[in-house]
Image (cartoon, rainbow, N blue to C red; front, side, top):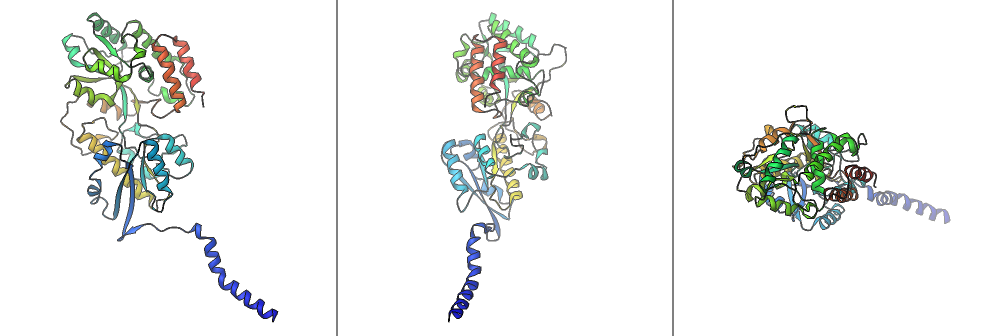
Length: 438
């Protein structure tokens, strides 16, 4: 009787074994790609609070159908500021229908997701579709982890001087190409009681950007060298750049008490024609064009070289690291998702170029069949010609290339420098110490 019961128990266990194994492995089951009437579905997410992207992508689903007829693409607009948006993305990534493609404008958020392996490195997929032939060289930005996690989509901005062309013309002042000519320009405008250069020194970043911009006329790769430890702020290049700004301070090139002016306040001085030049970035070009009725132009920072060579027209700035369209690790079609993300990026930048008149695009216009807007050139063509050439863009230190702690320290030191509270050597030493912060 006992043997009979054992035999029955063994048979029951054998019969139940496949079910037990199935339950044990349930968490490892692979979910098949989502299909919809034979089409592969892609869920794409961008922030609703970004008004410009919201407007640009309003008709994207209709536009993209002929390009990817075998894809079913759904664009999801998510509300919230950066923190709320990031939190919602995290929730969505752990849901039953995680996004395949989503936007990140926060490099710390991107770094967090990459460390958790929630997003895919894209360098191989982007290279396989020849993406880098479509964009300018400075668009290719490697993350600290050694990978590329974002398809760039946002505008790249460059530090420049904007000039009031009417003031230059009315006062018969020549546009400077060298630093010596710039000093002469400053003196001429001072003699006419016109502020030569408007700059916001309150948070210090505009001051640092000016010094960095002068430095890159001496070495187009200076910031990358500092970031990699091959050079330092107290080295020859930045020392000469800081010295040049100190010379401008002594010439009273900037408004009185510059350290108390925000960048917005400095801009208002320029827009009201009380300043001949404005140290800013190309981000403010369209605003300046509107405020000054087209009487504005881009001026490259004059070279500090004194060997008489022609201006190199190097600019500092570029694409922000780890910002753009990310591809979720959960997508079952990473190659197709990458292609779709590139189309989204092209679509958005075409919108900016044709509709918004933003000619300073990350795409090489030689390879794009885009129709330019009717806005005046403002010296942008020359800028575009330069930035699409290799070695003409110095990596901007504050294009998400350093931590917020380091950035704040640089701002504070730069404010103290423009206010005359730090000597050149003390200022540069402070920047070197800053780079050692964690």
